[in-house]
Length: 241
Image 1 (cartoon, rainbow, N blue to C red):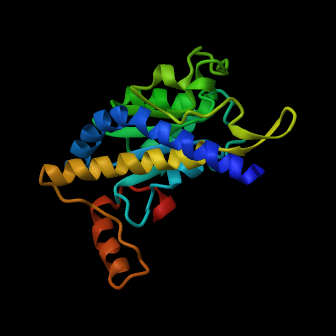
Image 2: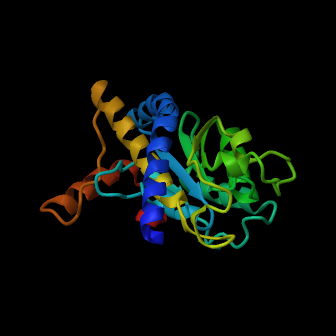
């Protein structure tokens, strides 16, 4: 097979396994997120560096939940291993958009060892926010953390979603010892969309409104989003206005 075909076959098989292995966790946490949203709360996300892209997948997303917001690192992850930096990010975010007890945050770190996601998770837990880690357990259980607390992300989180990634993320050997074709974004984004759908299922089953973002490319979409966003005006980060 070509390198592309090899990657596709391995990635899709891993995606199927990730779905099966993570659905019990997704179904356990979805009612908590649903109840928070039904009560006017929001779902927070944080990912440093490339992991930020995964969190952005469910923020302001057509067909997704409106009350999802992100703690965005203006340094694009370059300072993610400066001890104290993640705490300052969390404090600044909390001052503007507020962590509220009973809400949840998805903290994304493929390695699970870097300081910023660990510090954001610890800060959120102090505020009574449930922490859902999205990580590669293969890496997070073996890589030594750089955080002085000594724990990796999965050991701090209340729930863990495992993207089943390999050490180094890439799965396709292109030359001996050299790999390409990462899976963390593909599988991480899918797991978060599955979580979104389970939350929507819970809201629907329990008779609550489903605060969905409408595509702005269809008639009335922008107007519907503007009206819905008024409920969350002080809670959604500047990433989405």
